[in-house]
Length: 242
Image 1 (spheres, rainbow, N blue to C red):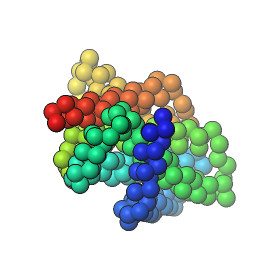
Image 2: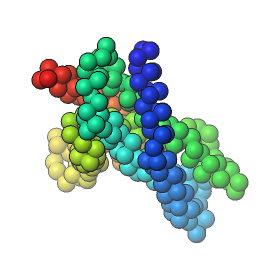
Image 3: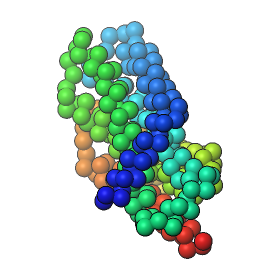
């Protein structure tokens, strides 16, 4: 556990030593603010619950994009710089390496979400907001973001550089996003299967409305665990191949 925390601390330190980290956070908050004012609040009167629901919808999309950029460098950068060899020759297992790196970007993603709290807080000025609704929405955004982080990290594990890592991770996320559209155009049992696998829409919408379903939490945790394990197996295979 100490090695996992050590790796996570190292990664977070490296992240904030470059402009890229600050650019991702600043751009995410800026776009979030613009969309919040343009669409969530808008020009027509809305119930506070509807404003909050729209905020979480846009925040989830921005969070997914930010997650891809946050995680694309995790392992691909090590391969590009040749420093991945240092991990293979150190007393650190692939599992410790992957979990440490995942923990680092998850903490950064949580920081990003904490910084965005001022937007839903603005609703308190003119309306009433349920704290349960806010908790549910941020829980959904965090679970969705963590799932995308795990997918993008897998892309970083299989790709030789950061660009291909971003393309690989984003491609998998887009496929999982579009499955709910495909589900409406095919017959059973594929319709139910695609709807179940889809990463957003039916899975995230309850969170944005203030509803927490155990099945949706289990789904996101399963996605996270699956792609983290895929990353570990990829690195173990690479070590065996020399």
